[in-house]
Amino acid sequence: MQTAETWAGYDGCSLVGQPDPIPIDLDASLPGAETQIVRYDAGCLPGGSAELWTINGAPHSPNLSADYNNLVIEWLLSHTSSARCPADLDGGGDVGITDFLELLAAWGPNPGHPADLDGDDVVGITDFLELLANWGPCP
Image (cartoon, rainbow, N blue to C red; front, top):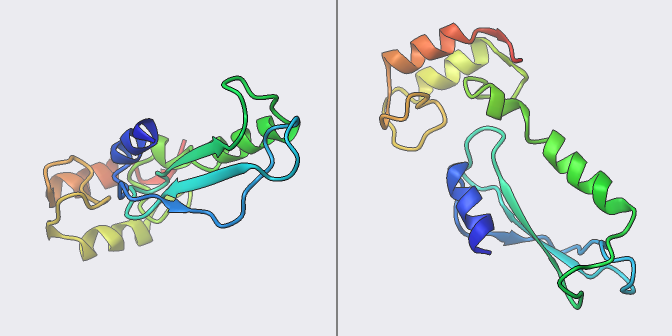
C-alpha cells in the first residue's frame, strides 16, 4: 500500500484509494476472481494514477494467469502519453487550443494544478510558454 501511495503522490493523486467492487482473476491456482484492485486516480495530473492489486490467498510468488501480462500492458499503455507530454492538459494526445483554454481557466495561484507546468504553485506566463513550446502532437 505504501508503494502505491508513493506513486499516487508522484502523480499528484489523492492518497485515498478507491476499491473497485469487481475483483479480477490473476492467480491461476486459486478458484475465481481473488484479486482486489484499489485505484488512486482522484485529482491526478493528466494521465496519472496508481493501482494496488492484492491477490488474496496467494503465496508470495503467485501462479499468475495468462491474462496477467495483458492486463499489466493494457494499464501501462493507458498511462503513457501524459508522462511524455505534460502540457497535454486535456489528455487528447496533442497540445492545442483546449489545453490553452484549460491553462487560462487555472490562471493565478493554483498549487498542484496540472496546468502548473513549472511546479511553482502559480499558473502563469512560464507555464504558458511551456505549453507553447510543446504545441502540436505529443511524442
